[in-house]
Amino acid sequence: MDEFSFIRSIQPKFYRQSSVIKGISDDAAVIRPVDGDFVTAVDTMVEGVHFTRETMEPEHIGWRVLAANLSDLAAMGSTPRFYMVSITVPRCWSEKELQSVYRGMKQLADKYAVDLIGGDTVAGKELSLTVTVIGSVAKDKARYRSHAQSGDLLFVTGTLGDSRGGLEYLLSGQAACSKAHDYLIRRHRTPEPRITTASSLSSLQRIALNDVSDGIASEANEIAEASQVEVIINHEAVPYSEALSTCYPDHYQAWMFSGGEDFELLGTVPEKDWPTVEKTAESAGVRVTKIGYVQNMRSPSPCVWLDKDGRRERLAASGYTHLKEEGE
Ligand SMILES: Nc1ncnc2c1ncn2[C@@H]1O[C@H](COP(=O)(O)OP(=O)(O)OP(=O)(O)O)[C@@H](O)[C@H]1O
Ligand SMILES: Cc1ncc(C[n+]2csc(CCOP(=O)(O)O)c2C)c(N)n1
Ligand SMILES: [Mg+2]
Ligand SMILES: [Mg+2]
Ligand SMILES: [Mg+2]
Image (cartoon, rainbow, N blue to C red; front, side):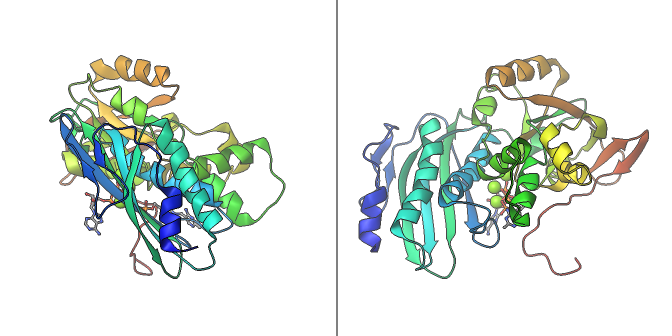
C-alpha cells in the first residue's frame, strides 16, 4: 500500500450534499455556505485508549469515531453534512483493514447523507483517528448546555451504562456470548447518535442538550455549570437495560452514571414541551425518560443532586478523564 493508492481507494464516487464544490482531490475542500449557522466538532480515537484489537474490529473503529462526532452535532441540534478524517497508521495495518475502518464510517455516514470531503494520512506508532464534522442549524437555533432554566424537567434518551458493560465483557476475553452480552457489545461498538431526535425538536423555543460521552454524572454537572442552576436527578428513574442489570448486577448502578460512551442525549425542556419531546422520540424509535428537574441555585455554586432512597446527596462529576494525574 502507498499513501496515494490508499487515498484513491477511499475517495467517494459522488457527494450527496450539493454544497460540496470540491471534495477529495485538491489541497483543500471547498464547501458553499448553506442557510443558517455552521456547527463543527472534532473527536479523536486512539488505539490503547479508546479501543484495542480485542475490543473492536476495524469497521467498528470507523463507525464509533464518526458516531462520537455526530453525537456532538446532535447535542447542538444540528444536521450533519460533511466530515474530514485524519489518520495515523502503524505499518502493521493492511490496506484491507484500513478500508474496513472507512467502510465503518461510510455505513454511518450514509444513514445521514454526510459526505467525506477530505483528510490526512500519516504512518506512525499506533492507530489514531481524528474526525472533524461540520453540520448546519437554523440561524441562532443551536442548542447549548447553558439553556437550562429553573422549572425545566431533565430527560435522557435510551439506556445508560450499556457501552461500559460491553467494554467490560470484551476486555474479560470470555468467549461464550449470550444475547444480552451481544446487545451490550453492539452498544459499545456501534452506538447510534441521536441525530434525528435532536434535529426533529427544532420547533422548540428552548432546550438544553449535552451528549453522554463521559457519563451523566459529568454531563449533568456541565449543564448545571453552564446554566448556573442546580440539577436534581431521581435515581429510581434513570433508565438501564435489562441486559446490563442481568449481566452486571454489582456494577450497573455505577455505570449508569459514569460508564460513559453511551452517546445518548441528556437534556432539559420547559415542562409544557415534554409531550413534544416524547412524541418526537417515539417517531424516531428512541426511548426517552424523564429523570429529574432543574431548580435555581441554592448552594454557592452550581451542582447536581441525586435523590436516592429518600435521601438527597451531591452527585459529583465522575467518569473517564484524560490527562488526570495519579491520585487526582
Ligand atoms: N485541545 C483542544 N484545543 C482546543 N479546544 C479544545 C481542545 N480540547 C477540547 N476543546 C474544546 O473544549 C470544549 C469541550 O470539549 P470536550 O472534549 O470536553 O467536549 P466533548 O467533545 O463534548 O466531550 P468528549 O470529548 O468526551 O466527547 C469544546 O468546545 C472543545 O472544542
Ligand atoms: C480499551 C478501552 N479502554 C477504556 C475505554 C473507556 N474509555 C476510553 S475514553 C472514554 C471516555 C470518552 O473519551 P473521550 O472524552 O476522548 O471521548 C472511556 C470511557 C475504552 N473505550 N476502550
Ligand atoms: Mg465529543
Ligand atoms: Mg471532545
Ligand atoms: Mg459532547
